[in-house]
Length: 87
Image (cartoon, rainbow, N blue to C red):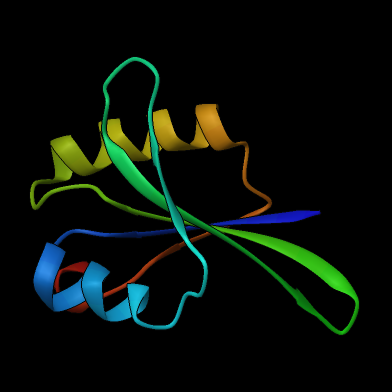
């Protein structure tokens, strides 16, 4: 299974928009920080994908820390930072 981590800085203008494209998601909390992530699974062309969607906050410092925590916990194959705040 391929794990894809998608992060954004903003809740309503970024993360919730991406969430609209995920099906059958569940909320997963980081075991230490209790940060909430959405997790969804799908299959495309026979390849199973786990999609993890999280929010980092708006400062470089917080984004860096949250990104490192998410990478260590979910061990993704791919990471995307999306949204207007990622410019």
